[in-house]
Length: 219
Image (tube, rainbow, N blue to C red; front, side, top):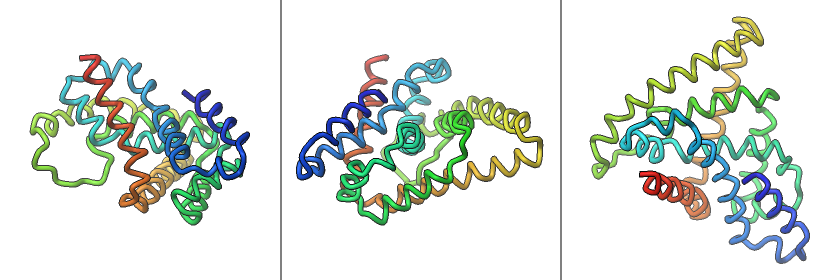
């Protein structure tokens, strides 16, 4: 999936200036970028062991925000925020101010990517890492099944903490864990800044739709 993103960016950069900035192509790229998390989730044995209701809760409440964090990590890994074509195209869709803030958020991410990969699974198995909105149509079994997620999340949170202590000692672990949490909160704030933006809905809802389709196939 990451290779697909690189290919799309490379192809976009080779186009004439006017064609590089087509919003539809930018949304397709964003969708590809966000969906890089799906193979990671689908291959996880912890995800496979979940009940269907718990799996559904994971998709409904955690897929958008965990995929956004993963998108930040991929952006940094392949240096997209330093790509003028990518930045120009995204600025046209999401606004220059939003993209500049996103760059600042990415620059504050700690250099040790393994910490964020563990944090990614802490978010994936959260009982709800999205903005809480009452939904009277949601099945009560899905809500109750979030307890199943917390049991798995505790394991990943413990591994993350022990890894931090191993690397930095107790005081350093506290500081680095706080920095990671601050990064996550910055990311959530940035995402909510465009929560009413149709471009965001189109790009992110595709992730949820594909994840739900994957769930139905595996069932």
